[in-house]
Length: 410
Ligand code: CTP
Image (cartoon, rainbow, N blue to C red; front, side, top):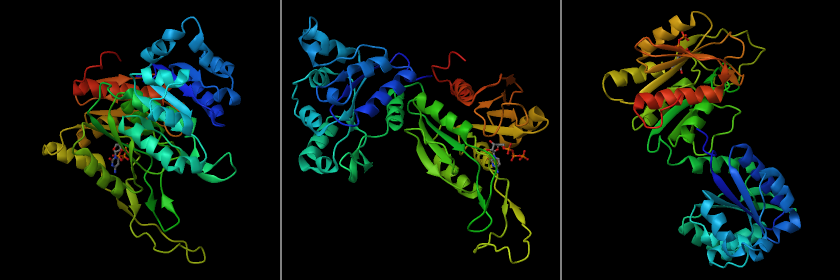
């Protein structure tokens, strides 16, 4: 499910050097599947032209002159009415002040007054202007009326100084917009817990035992669940991936920490998806100080880690946990036989099995080729597909098992 599909987004652009970032934002939103229409203020046109936005959105861009055209008496109403979300990025201190006080002296502020959809504001200004008590009071007023603010963030400002005033990065803004658009989806009110990444088991303060899991499949599951409206706890070991906007990150490193986090998170959840590659063993006696090479080559004695899914399986057996449990099995041989064994041993509702040796499947790559296995013996082999598509399929099966409306097509 793509939260941007069939969505009309109205992008208001005001006079700030961050206008160039607004063009990037418009482009990202359109590429994600939304219809984007931009309104530029007079001041914005000192920094960027309507043609820039027309080029990236593929639609007409509106300016104050349109207010006085043939359709001027209704243009603000028609723009406001079809918008699912209005975004003002960058928003200057002046425009924020006008919005707070209901002043409507240009197409953008008139349209904002007419809008019935949620409004999201990404301010951009000098740090001193942002800190000014007048600006802060205006922001509080708008927040109290339900307007959402993202940023500004800290960093280098146009003045050459550092401070809080930079517009939030367009990729982050696009993520927040995606999250906002997804609310109200079929998994609204359901909490899904997802684990991702390879756990890290310390050998000494510098070294860890870990594995090749990138976390990509788990993070794709998180995004798919968020896109369907779920509340998502992401229990993740360190990865290089951005955290999907709206996910509640619970950072962990070791299998022991992951077990603790899972047990704390699942009790009010509808499902647990264990996409993490959990280390089965850890060094039995991690050194307190760095192991030096001058000393003898140290043997590494390992001890067993807890099996997280098996622990949850016991809770399920005792009716202490009533949600679904979905596991992953990355196998290098006898894939289906091993995966079927894990369904039974861990009391799973579904396992996603893949052959890590198959081309295009497994660690680090963006694609995966998996078979879904169920406790009743049913198996469904899926073709090679992107990890996002695998995530959509897993979520679809999950919704089917939960009996959630919206799982009508696969
Ligand atoms: N898993 C877990 N706790 C562990 C090991 C694995 O919860 N200590 C979960 C994984 O997150 C995955 C599933 O169990 O969802 C299967 O993991 P896998 O490593 O394939 O299987 P293992 O049970 O560890 O068995 P083996 O390594 O012997 O194949």
